[in-house]
Amino acid sequence: MPATLLVYRQLFTWLQQHCGYQDLRHLVTLAWMVLGLIGSERLNLTAWEAHIRSRAQQAQSSQRRWHRFLNNPRIRVPALYVPLLLGALRQWQGRRLYLVLDTTVLWNRFCMVHLSVVCCGRAVPLLWKVLEHNSAAVAFPAYRGLLQLAQRILCTFPDVMLLADRGFANQDLLQWLQQSSWHYCLRLPGDVSIHGPYRYPVEVRQLWPKKGEAKLVRDVRLWSQGTYCSHLALANVRGAREPWAVITDETPSLQTFWQYSLRFAVEELFLDSKSGAFELTAVRLRS
Image (spheres, rainbow, N blue to C red):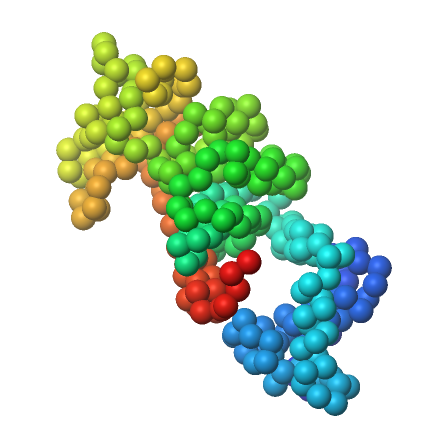
């Protein structure tokens, strides 16, 4: 059996096992599209042609079929993708699941909000959303739906921790997290007010430890109102551009910094999306 056909059958079996589509023609088309993407390493329908086996007499026939699939309103991406990811994560039941929340901007016009699972040093997309927004900073209502959906999808995972950079350190997100069952490690900007270590509120930047040292503070209250309480871990690592201030719901320790550092796995995902395998910056899509 040709290697191409063998891989196709494996892909089709995997899709059929986890996706509940009644019309198998959709899965046939999707399996060939995935095979073309893997074989060509390009997000280009024309490049996929060399990697498929088809009865179509003309290459345009396959491309038209793929276009119809991509534009079919009855094809729901979450219904196809999420079961596949959950199938891959099934062996992680009982282990902590680390999620990274982050954004990236395309063409100074669109902002992609990603919620990803950290796996083997990489970030695997779980859910995502595209906003017509020219900044990487987004308000909580813009991604609240992603978090709520992720919470429902991952309801069988009892131990989930959300990791996010300074742009997501806001009162709305912290309130949502404290009302959920998720743990968290969020980095704070240096100008956030802290209540607790001293008699009067101070900014985070006033608490930086010396170079090469860390400082762990329990039960601090955050922002000017001091409404929300959390634990604080500060580190001033030699060679780093700037110190870290991370809040967490768990007892702060050096492990807190390791947990937060897992969020950097998303950088490789964005590199792949924008200029690597998927070449989003090179495509002509603008809507």
